[in-house]
Every structure is written in C-alpha cells, then in structure tokens.
Image (cartoon, rainbow, N blue to C red; front, side, top):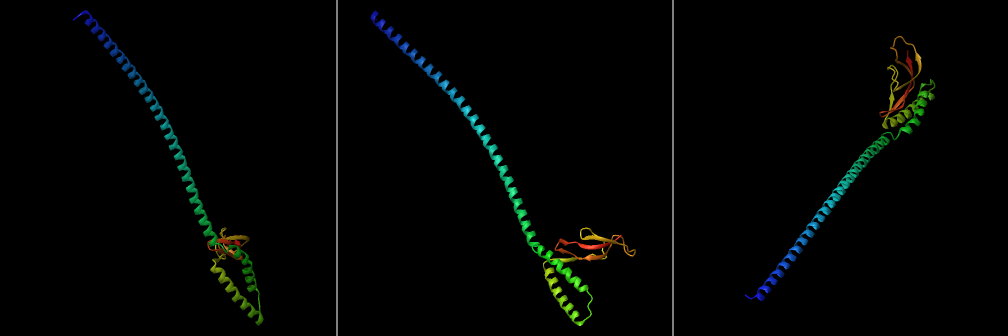
Amino acid sequence: MSKDENKELNEETVKTAAVEGDNQTEEASTSASAADEAAENTDSGEAETDSCGTRIAELEEELERKEDKYLRLLSDFENFKRRSAADMQAAEKYRSQRLMLELLPVLDNFGRAFDAEVTSEDALALKKGMEMIYQSFRSAMEKEGLEEIGAEGKEFDPNYHHAVMQGQDDSKPSNTVLEELQKGYMLKDRILRPSMVKVNE
C-alpha cells in the first residue's frame, strides 16, 4: 500500500471517529434532556396529585356539611308536621270549647230556676216544660263531650275544685267537700270550669 493510500485511510478513520463522537455527544445530551423532562413531569404530576387530593378533601367536607344540614332540616320538618297534626287534632277535639263556656251560665240559670219553690199548677206546668227544654239542651251539650264534675261528699281536689268557703262537720273527714256552690264541668278530658265548693276543715 502506498503512502498516499495510507494517508487517505487514516483521514477517513479520523473522520469516522469524529462523527461517532459527535453522535455519542448528541445522544448523551438527548438522554440528559429526557431525564430532566421526566423529572419535571414527575414533579408536576406530584403537585397535581396533591392539588387533586386537597380538592377531594374539601368537597368531602362540604358534602358532609350539606348532609348534616339536610338531616337537620328534615328533622325540623318532621317535628313541624307532628306539631301541626297534634294542633289540628286538639282543635277538632275541643272545637266547641268557647261555645260551651258561653252556655255554662245558661245551665246555671236553669239550675237556679229549678231550685225556686212553685205551688200553683201553672207554675208547675211551666217548670215541667223548662225541665224538658233543659234536658234536651243538656243532652246536646253532652254529645259534644260536656261532663259534670261531681263534688259533694268527695275529697277536695284542687285540680277539679275551687274552695271558696270552709265549714265544720265532725261527722265527715277533714278536707271533704261539704257543699257544691257552683257546678263544675269538663269538656272531654279538659277542665272547662272547676266546681266552686265549701270544704270541711
């Protein structure tokens, strides 16, 4: 092989080596860039994951608050429905209370009229007619739930009796009702008017 051929061969070898070196440098640079990009992506992904986790926690907390508020409102509404139903039942049950209170003096007046002494036949006939009216009137009131409170001879009960006088009767126990001065009445299970009584000491 001649010197010129050797020289050309050496130059080609040097060029090939230089190209390969450049290629390796480019590959190394590309790998480093890819590694940096991967690291950046990883950091960005972690930050995004943290942000999503925080948002999920916030939404769960908000949902819990709204569920609690909903349950409270539902409970309040159920209580309101129960109270309304109870009020309606009471209004229906005692719908005639005001009318009954206004009619009690009429019953009292009938009682006073019957206590009056009458001797003439006309007065007796009138009294008998009044008694029939009274019975009809009283029956209508009883259908609405009116009931007389019995008092005389019973033990005094401040829930049902209103003591206005005291008396002395050794034949009867202390705290016994000696006399009923004004009748008391109940409307179903509610006291409409307590009995006005005289109580034994």
